[in-house]
Length: 144
Image (tube, rainbow, N blue to C red; front, side, top):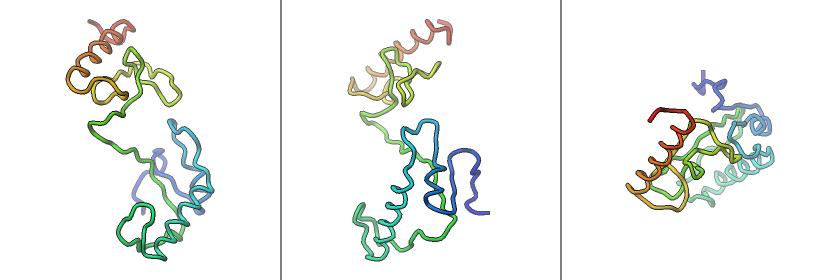
C-alpha cells in the first residue's frame, strides 16, 4: 500500500492533517521540532504557486499539483555534497561531534568529510587520518 515505505523506521512520517504530520517529524539529531504553522504556511505557499503557475521560490517548472488530500507524507532527507567546506563537525582529535557538540564515541572523521576551513586535499586527509588514528589508539578503540 502506498507510500511503499516502512513508516516505523523513523525516516518517513504521515498524518491526516498537516499539523499532525509536523508534530510527527522527529529525528534524534534534529535541532528544533517542526513548527506545525511553518509546514501549513509552506504548503499553502506552494499551493498558491499551482494557482499562479509560477514557483516564486525556486523557479521550478510550472507546479501542477496542489497538496490538499490526506494522508500527508514527509521523509527525512539529508543532501550529500562533494568537495565542500562543510562536513561532519569534529574536535581537535578528529572525533565526530553530534548536533549538541558532544563526542560520538568511536567515530572519527578526517579529510573531505570533515567540516571546517582547513587545508584541502590529500595533505588534510593524511594529517587528520594520523590524528584520528592516534586518538583512536589512545582511547582503546583499536591497536597500533
